[in-house]
Amino acid sequence: MPKVSPDEVLKKDQIGVATGLAWTAVGGDVLFIEALRMKGKGNLVLTGQLGDVMKESAQAAFSYAKSRARELGINEDDFNTYDMHIHIPEGAIPKDGPSAGVTLATAMVSSFSQRPVRKDVAMTGEITLRGNVLPVGGVKEKVLAARRARVTKIILPAQNKRDMEEVPKELMGEIEFVFVEHVRQVFEVALKEGARTPPAPPRPKVLPQQPAPPTAH
Figure 1 (cartoon, rainbow, N blue to C red):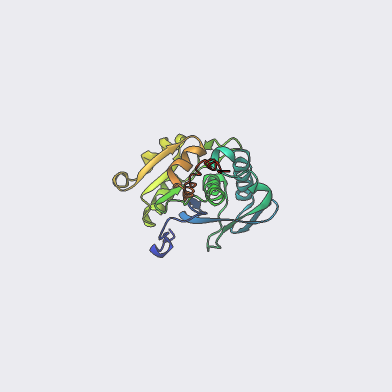
Figure 2: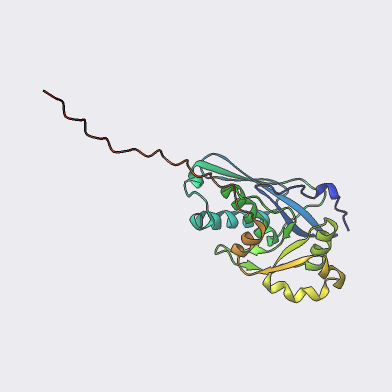
């Protein structure tokens, strides 16, 4: 099983960086997905350790965010004036599969809405174009990887509740498990509120102009 260095754990809540859980041939692993908006024309740029299936998940997440921009607190014009760059840092173990869908969506929405992602939350789940979260495999291995990374909260698809019987009982008291059916529930748990624009200072009151006193003749 690969060891997760404590140095890899996020030190603070960050905009556009989400923690995902992956299954590999040698067990579970933690991956950090980075999303950055940059001036452009609405393109999706993918770099790093992404297989073909993961690229399709990234496109599905991007399409979902674009179609729900207003309700997600995103300026709809941003999809015409910015490109979205998704990067998964190179690792020793290649990763692919649909289970990074919710993590990709969270990183994108965080970047577009400028809402930080909570550093103590990790997640896994496949996402559809409508935002539904589908079950994934390797839950036990992913939970163990999250524990090694000192994650305190894990978001899982609701249909994966049946797999919790395989998770060691001692982990139930150490990690909080949140089961979701839709990606909006993921955002509610994983994203913090963005920096609020301070209210504009009150305008000075303008007193009505008094009529000039009559001039003596």
